[in-house]
Image (cartoon, rainbow, N blue to C red; front, top):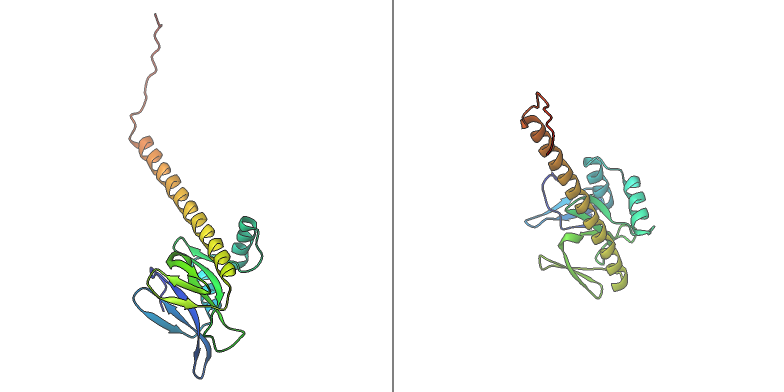
Length: 178
């Protein structure tokens, strides 16, 4: 599945016959079944963006002061938080991920998405809400960094254009002030 310019809503574990655990990747228009666990899929997304999971975990640990249930920060529109998926077949691979940009609210132990679907989880409301808030904080941080980089780049372009188009000063004249 190509992951360029596709908005991913959620990644849920699903059993694939004669393979094992795979992932169902939900987008606004379609769903895709891939032969990778959700965690492996997100780690490959990190590598495609040139990021390292350990480095990102250090940034999250420093920023949020947490050491468990860390969100996956892929880019400014893909920040995922994990949860225990209720409909998983295997206990050890029941971790699903939701894109915090598509989460409308959390009711009891269900994640209600902006697309109208809901995801049943085994987590408590407090855990889900804390994970969502941590992911939302990192999403805003990522957007702030991107906007700062954008503004800095725009300033550099403006300064370059001003420097290249400004008239050259050839002679300095001084006169006495009255």
